[in-house]
Image (tube, one colour):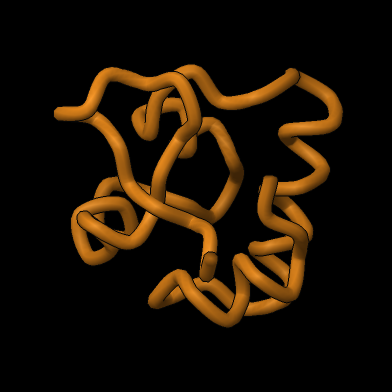
Amino acid sequence: MADVGELAENIHGIGPKLAQAIVNYRAQHGDFGSIDELVGVRGIGLTIIKANRGVIVVKDAPLQTQIDVTSD
């Protein structure tokens, strides 16, 4: 699970503030089931998701919906 630093460093268009919002959302709502759920985070829209195809991965999501947010 990516932390604030990893998210801010690896996702284009995400700085520390939005990275913290992702972590807070995940803590409040649980793990993301699909990348589409990222739009529930205030400040993240489809443009950011589309710009990061191949960068963000939501664990246990179907392969066609995965985007990798880890820098492993």
